[in-house]
Image (cartoon, rainbow, N blue to C red; front, side):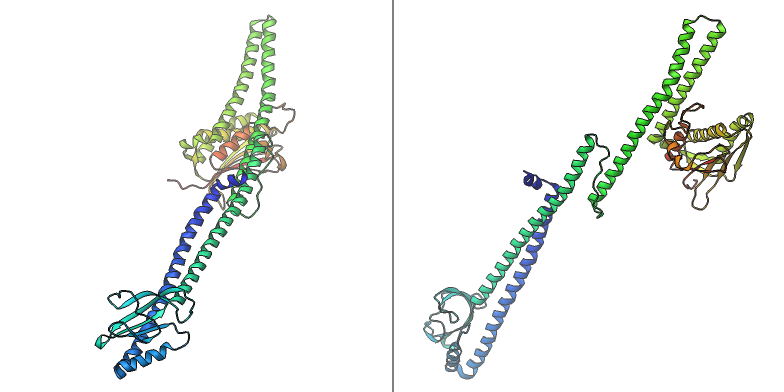
Amino acid sequence: MRDFALLRTTTFRVALLYLGLFLASVLVILGMIYWFTAGFIERQTDETIAAEIAGLREQYRQRRLPGLVEVVNARSATPRTSTLYLVTTPTYTPLAGNLSAWPDAQPDPEGWITFEIEDAPVNNDGSRHDARAVVFTLPGGYHLLVGRDTRERQQFQERVLNALAWALLLTVGLGAAGGVLISRNVMHRIDAINRTTRQIMSGALQERMTVQGNGDELDQLAANLNAMLDQIEHLMVGMRQVSDSVAHDLRTPLTRLRSRLEITLVEAGTEDEYRAAIQDAIGEADRLLGIFSALLSIAEAEAGTLQRSFQQVPLADLARQMADLYEPAAEEAGLGFESDIRAEPIVLGNQQLLAQAIANLLDNALKYAPEGGRVTLTVTGIGEGRGPCVSIADSGPGIPAEQRESVLRRFVRLESSRSSPGNGLGLSLVDAVARLHGARLEMDDNHPGLIVAIVFPRITPG
């Protein structure tokens, strides 16, 4: 059954198609070889006959019919000769030569005839085979025939045909065997991919396709599938982490909200107590809405659908607007705030998402910078190996280098107690916005503190 399945594979069909094209080309080449070979031998035979005729014509011119008969008898007596001679009377009675009778064949307009002979001079075994000759009518009605036994030519042509036939059969056999071997090899590798795929569908997400390392198209396919599986596994791990984090981050405020409302409902109080309870409930609801809003913004950024609304955004003007918005909050928190606009770059993007990303970075900087610290918003233009950049630096505790990759995941916070305000979505949103704009998010030490930069690709304003 496996062999029959092999015959239905695309690889085997392609191998058969290639074999058919190869056979067609081989047939053309072998046909040309046979045609040139047979033509060369036939021309050689005709040239030999023409040379004999020229010699006999000279003898007849000098010595007339007796001399011609004498020469024909002498040449006919040559052992194992392939040349045929016959001189006859006007009534076709033989006078000289190595043929017993005049052939029963009609000459063509040039005098050539083809006929069968028996008891050839070369091989007197009673077999019959073809001969080719030229006939002439001499003065006085006498007849002359000069030809060649074509037995050797026929045998050579048969050998050539046999060799070509064997070559063709060998080509077919080797081609079919090669097609089967190639198909088996490809089928073996495809079966391995199918087995791994079935294991993955059964839940073994850690399985990967085997890459042999020879760089062919199947290796490229396996590498691409492995990269896709890595991404899928990464997304699934992220989804599990998001689910756990959502459950943890939403359960507490929802429980607290329900408890407060229940206590307020059970315990009768004053109007001020009811008002305070409602305000607390609104605050918890706003926090929950903020989480869902951030998740929605991240999903929109990762989907890439907002790229259709991209336009040229003056990055320096956007940074100035954010600086005007956050400078009072920094002063109120006892922090120094500085905006360093060094260039006026233009980036291609969504202004609302870029503003939200910068706002998230400024929120983090203001939240973690200690009292008396500083927050700096910097905008630079195109530099060596870098595109336009907006960065926010603070003098807070910073983020250890080994944890900078993990804090970009959703709901990941360095505080295990989660006692400080926040939901762990700020840097996730910034990273999603950066990737949407083809930019990269860079984090570095500020000694002390952290510098977070969004480095955009270079564009030509136009």
